[in-house]
Amino acid sequence: MERYEIDKLRALPIEGVADRLGLKVKKHKALCPFHADSHPSLSFHVGHNTYKCFVCDAHGGPIDLSMKLTGKSFIEACKWLADEHNVILTEWKPAEKPKKEYPPDVEYLGRLVAHPVLNADARRFLFEERRIHPAVVQWLGITSISVATPCWRNGKPYYDAPSLLFPYRDRNGRLMNVQSRYLGRKEGVPRFRFPSGAECRIYGLQVLERLKTGEGLWLSEGVTDCLALLSSGRKAIAIPGATLLKPEDVKLLASLREEKKTVFHIFPDKDEAGERLYRQLLNAANEIGACLIKDELPEGYKDFGQWWASQI
Image (cartoon, rainbow, N blue to C red; front, side):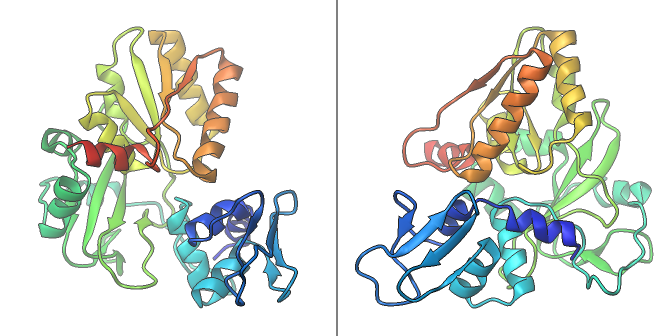
């Protein structure tokens, strides 16, 4: 794992990490899980992004809290944090033995997703758990694998199985990349993976060719929320994570404002990562003179995908 990736995880808001770990944080305090605590003695310092118990002296940052509370090793705790907060990391590898990275073999990836097939795990996840409309799945060419699959010709298995495969295409439908979403239960397997050396970009760009002048476009965090928004009849694209908004993506949003007078919308996830993405997008919208409307989720729902699944 690269140093900058570790720094990215250490920068995750400590109270958001605590919430994902099941701690009930109120006014920057929580019951300490590391000793018998009847009065909240675990304090969170938002400015320093740390926690400290003034009774048992447990202390540290987001990674330390994850390790101590889950019993995971450093690497496993980092993987867990990445999965829970939609932080896309590069291929897991020892820093002292860096592997040569090759650009994704788009020709091979094209054959991998050329004939979409959904296995039982994929159908259960998409249609039963997430209530995604079959027409959306078919239009985007989503497929699945049941055995571990290489990401380049003659390469070792990289996409874990069972997994969904999401083709990333440009506005004209040209394949750029393929992201996997692990559906199994094996511990330590990253939930989301891109081929080694791949550049992470916006998902669902094909929808822009169907966007009418003055029509709303929803910006979502992650592919599954994007699928739910599309299933609801909204036009939507996905930014893979709150830490991955690139200058090129901002230029794209600016071009949409100029070309089609697009009004942007967002249902922010109700966690620190979701709010961070919303603030990033709001700043970007202000820079390009665009309108970003914040749509609120009903009480009790963490993200749009969860709310959508409950409505069907």
